Picture 1 (cartoon, helix red, strand yellow):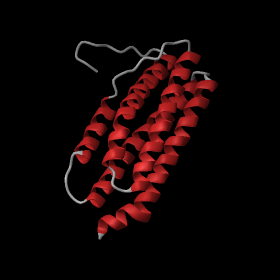
Picture 2: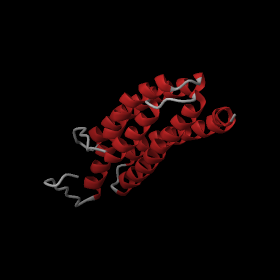
Picture 3: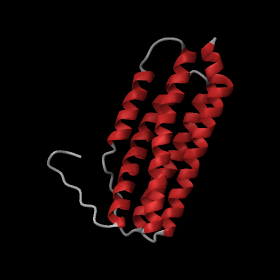
Picture 4: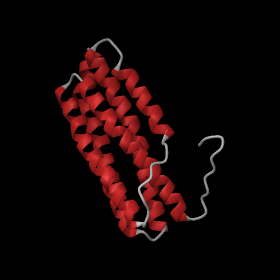
Length: 169
């Protein structure tokens, strides 16, 4: 939040819309970052995983737009400084030189940091939607939350079964 801006949160709907705006900005930024991560990955399964998650992320953007619509609001991004920082850290990995297997392990670590942020964000927003009586919005957010958890699990399995063992040798 900037020095001369103010945010007013007087209702659960205000809070929900603020959180949706944060997630909307995050997902839009990720649609630009994921292709770079896929390009930087040397492992074919990791590359494919990033490409698959890009498709999911595009769907998540549309779901957030639908959530705003259900609330009678225009979709509006609220700058997500956390994702900006996480993407910046990911770009450091993308631009790093060195062993491709180590770099793949670092890409997974960067991606999981993003997933954990999103899991927290979607979980909170879903709960705010329920408290606001917006069950249809909560259902949309739950769908995305489930996808984010599944992506995190896939990254963990990939890291533990192949990427980290290759990086260790």
